[in-house]
Length: 173
Image 1 (cartoon, rainbow, N blue to C red):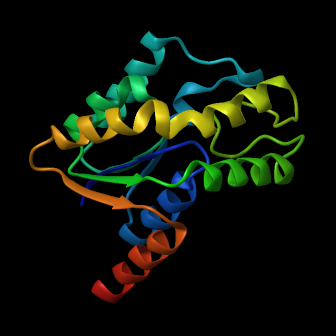
Image 2 (cartoon, helix red, strand yellow):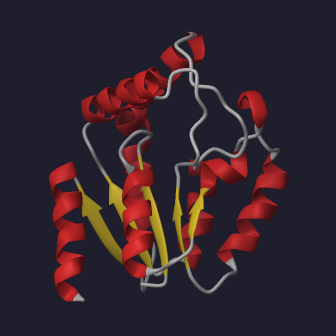
């Protein structure tokens, strides 16, 4: 495992797992949000983002976590392992609300610019996108993953499974 993708719904715990995994495996961690977001919730153009992503993908080792569906098929071509956090929508919604509360009026470290978390219309749109993520995306994600040859696929469906997976990594060392 030298090139690992961690994918899944927003607020499924991709960043948290990626940080733990990067520490255990001593691999560089790339947050797609750092490449994508600029100050005040503006974002890079597709061209800018794709160029930044391509530079990262060409490196020999990495963990890339994030959820930009448009680039998933490209990222899958470079990885040797994909970890899909396929959680129920209600778990992700609760996590997003918790994150909004804990990060209110702050910007998270895994963001590319200063993006202040607030309870506003955009936050409610974000929550709605999380609620509908599985309905709109799950089938596509599985189809894209299943098309990959020579890629180890790990599907985790709960925080308990994530914790057990990380725990078992300790035992393997």
